[in-house]
Image (tube, rainbow, N blue to C red; front, side, top):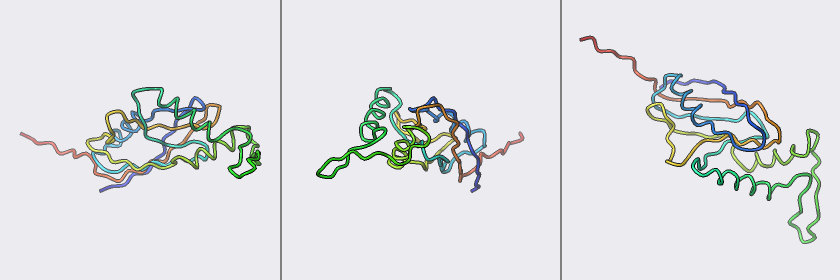
Length: 158
């Protein structure tokens, strides 16, 4: 078993999902790993990592709409009896700043995935997404840690 650390850079299009599955599989293959575990960590506090359906784009649209409904911009309504509006105190980078942090806290910033024969093991309709929670496009860094077995380079001379 060997270990390997690296960073992958991704550019998002702003609020929404970026499918990074193919990039991750290519990274594993170029790193010459056959099987093992891939640990991914987002190095940001306003985006997350998720595995979800890749067949119907409406799934991703519905996820975004649901998340916006439970994490509104500017303020939220308390769950107490008097249902008062509470305004965010952290807003220095815009109205999407604090909601992005809350969305990240409610989702995942780390994923651990198995891979075999150079490909991440996923279900038929699954993909790995970088979920951007800010309005504008961002450069995002994902830390990658591979623990696994390298491809053997044994050639038979005949």
